Image (cartoon, rainbow, N blue to C red; front, side):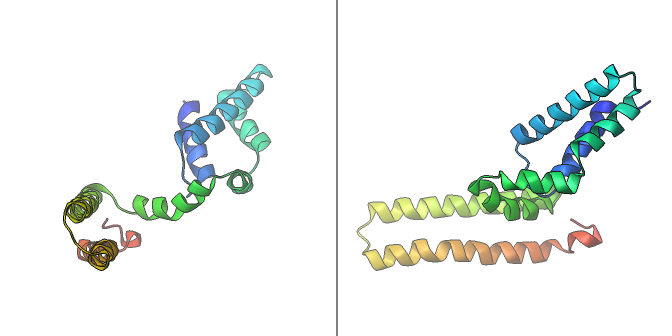
Length: 156
């Protein structure tokens, strides 16, 4: 039996692609598709026929994604490559990378607190605060390299 909700969810994911898929945008797109499906059902079509007609009326996923991309915020545009990288990792590798980032964030916050309470000169403060993100990024690359293969080989 045709599952309309699953088909709508799959279509929304396919349409939004690699964009930052906030739940509001996905819900709005799914709601619009459901309305189109209901309209087709009111014409007497079966669930799968109504879905096919509704997706045709909505337009091709690629063209629709391009149109939606025009309305993205600046934050979403910045978020896109970060989310694409984040989605590459699965399971324990993803957990390890999150723990790694949180430890570095805690270290940066602790260093900032220590520098604020100490009498370190401005050069020392800038050196510590300026090098820690670069050190985190370098260690992040090392951890990712140690975790293994590229996503194409399916080991992540």
